[in-house]
Image 1 (cartoon, rainbow, N blue to C red):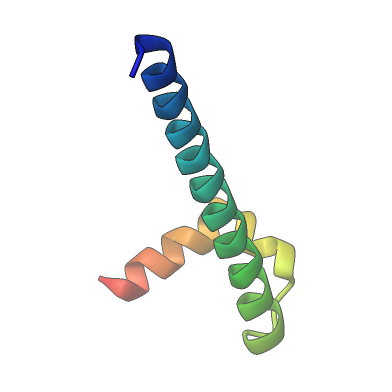
Image 2 (tube, rainbow, N blue to C red; image 1 turned 180 degrees about the vertical axis):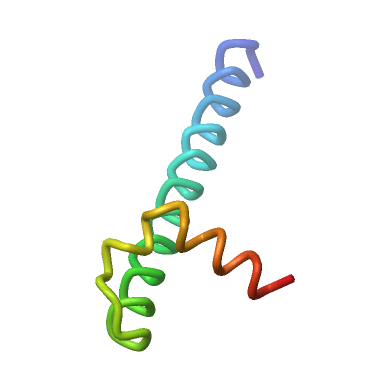
Length: 61
């Protein structure tokens, strides 16, 4: 294998990893919004506010 093909494989792997992480974060945010809005009875966009996450972290501790 040449060094350029190894670099291409590494680059493709890194791009896949970044895409998987971004999709995972997106799904987490969507799931949080659905859970907070539908099950929690709140505004789904409030889940993006820092005070909501502080409350969640206090609850978990």
